[in-house]
Image 1 (cartoon, rainbow, N blue to C red):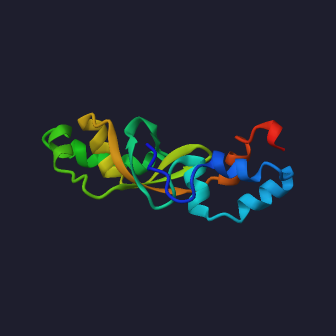
Image 2 (cartoon, rainbow, N blue to C red):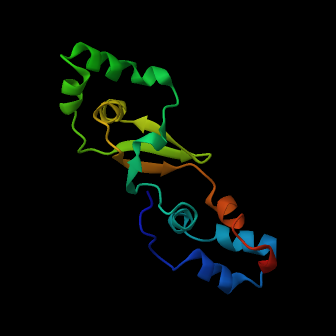
Length: 144
């Protein structure tokens, strides 16, 4: 699911250059980095990136959000016939928060994908997780 990391090398090389810092100074130095770089180090992608996301990994926050697509599929001659009319050209929109990928927009595309047995969907991701906390959790104890 990850997009290729772009920018200033790996997090491991960043840590190697900053291993002399105290835990607080390490935190402060991380906070000064570009948010997209932090996200790529922490999650493998940044907000706004489009990824191929496994359909099984996408969570529906409010089941009522699927009422319209379920109704539309039920009114068609068959759910599969309806699903084949749905365009997958535009990526769905998902949010990463608390380690969960939740569907924000594209419920018809998501439902059609489940009917058709698609394994992945293109998704534009919005990250609402703390990259610094995730990265600091990866710092070996001997570095501090």
